[in-house]
Image (cartoon, rainbow, N blue to C red; front, side, top):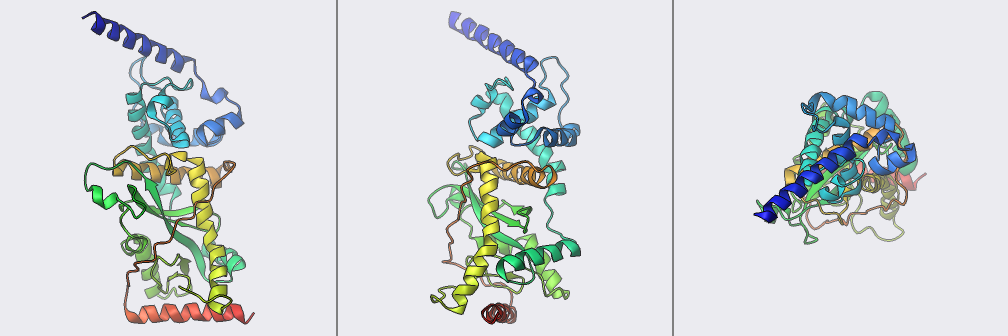
Length: 357
């Protein structure tokens, strides 16, 4: 009985101490440099996110309620560091219990996913944006008509309770296989994390709305627009891939070399994204159910675009470029043979134009 009373007294004292920390903390008092190091957002972008989602967050009704600014700070701290919730809660800027950190984090993530993801992650492009992308990708690779690059990246997670075998990837880890498309500015134009880690990149692409969008535009006469993917993707008129097993010093190998220059954009995007939000690193292994992992990924991608393109927040230092190993063992044939032949002829024409310059 005495042990129970002692535990209750200790818990009460800890709650009081945490509330004192929250009352005294003022994250906006940090220097701009320290603020970005802690939360990855600048103060200006932090205020933008807070103002955007405030209507979706629960308003504190008691004096012990968690202020919205603390909820957002705790969430960003977790996304930035990828540490344990208990460590985030004990931070001197938040003062939250582990369970409270968990509730706050998913309340904030849900609000960001609802309000900011649809606004800041859009695949559609205007004619002017397409022309700009065409020029930039062509200047780098010599491949005409390119508006983006697609690739998959695995977000590692703990073993899920349901359908565990679907998430067991070829590296013998549990993950989701996230398809990401970026443009020439390294803006994330699309993200799809709904597929388990055992799924092949080509399968994710086959069922994506982005493929359907490009195919529909192609059928409607927009024949000069395409994106690039590695050899794990199918060759289509709207999706070019490199040559497989190209002989050394051949025209095909030169095409692949130029092709890789354009594909480096997506590799750099993965490097910046995971350096900024370290919870996505394989070494961190997210301890959540798949649907929560997808939500975290979506939020990180939206915040990446907000930081980079709307508030010019400096990228983290010492970025390690993660190059995903291509699993080219399986490529699903999509569409009819006529479309495949059209894509092969198109790729050959581009290859020949490079070698005749």
